[in-house]
Image 1 (cartoon, rainbow, N blue to C red):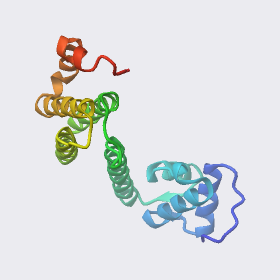
Image 2: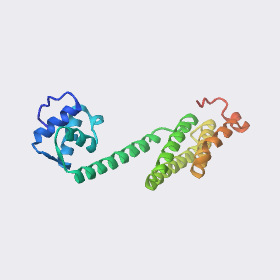
Image 3: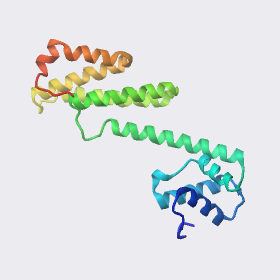
Image 4: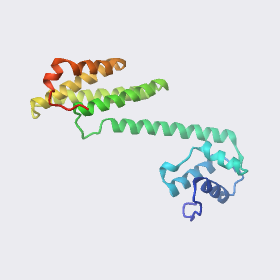
Length: 199
């Protein structure tokens, strides 16, 4: 199947073309996976449609659907997509070679909070644990850098501040944004980081 030259110009045309080539009037998981593969090969990974969307296109052209199999295939595909999305989100939170600055820490913690809220809405306890673990690891990294004698005092102060931000977020993420606003207005913060551009 992979070596067949496809004539279709649109995704819907390709879905129908692959289905006809498969010569299988009843559509189930095997056919849906084959069609997804063809969509990826012709249009790229971003063009892959859900099994349910593919089934709708095929139903409109007269295909007989094996509904339980399609529902199960679609549920598994969506679960994988959500996991991939969360994994990508975690990977992009703390690039391994990058040391956080106050500016990048502010952006990162905002993204962490958005992820946390989304995961809480879905009651995804495992993802919340992974997020907390990632934040804890970053806090420990900032603590080590705050004690690193090879850094300047200003760099150590910045890492100490980031450690505190992460501590507060880990303990009370719900109040972090308000706490940070007050912290940035404090005389101590302004004296220590007057030269830093934070936005």
